[in-house]
Length: 71
Image (cartoon, rainbow, N blue to C red; front, top):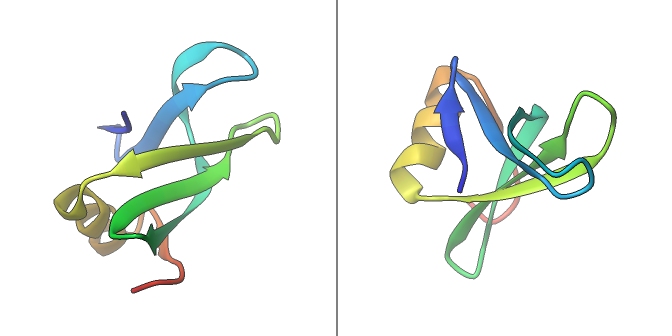
């Protein structure tokens, strides 16, 4: 589950097996009614996290993420 740590979106990195890795340049898309944040970690590995509607809108309003497709 994605959390808001120090204002940004964090997620679990499957490749490095570490928790709460900050996402670089996240984009939040709406697919099938779910809000999915996609981005990369500091090493360039792709990451994704599923967010709730309120959390996704809060990150976009704060400028932590960009709107993607499906809005």
